[in-house]
Length: 220
Ligand SMILES: [Zn+2]
Image: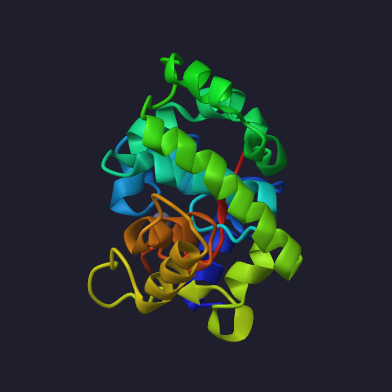
């Protein structure tokens, strides 16, 4: 732990005995905490940045949730999809890949009438066909998570070096996206794949100045 972090933790703990060393508090206002710039622009982004983005998950349901959302994002902004997330949760069977894989043409027509989601036939059909491939990968590797981490050197999250701009894609995302494309995945090119790796914490792209870089959380 850096000396500055220790000082910070001591200062944080002196405010309240209930605050843990891995928490960040700002006297109730979240705005004076240093975070990635994109994660400060909108209340929904702040919550997403502080609580989810870059947090390593090994839960296949979470993987599938982000796969659905990210493939729906193609060509749009992430905030657009994030605002529709709960509509997606309802429309796509609580992101249960097995149930989504069984969606029929009638489901597709129904979803096309749902104003709460992005009504794009190709994207909706891709979510269903991707769900089938997701299940096949689970069968082959035991879990989608194991499949994904099989590409990562050492099987551990990759931490952004902190020099230069955060890339929109990397060799790792190129390789995974190409493999998924070979398996039939749609709407999941390298850039979208990299966004997935960031979201589920396979890569940790929090800036060195961001409080989430080391996994600290906002205190409740
Ligand atoms: Zn950050």
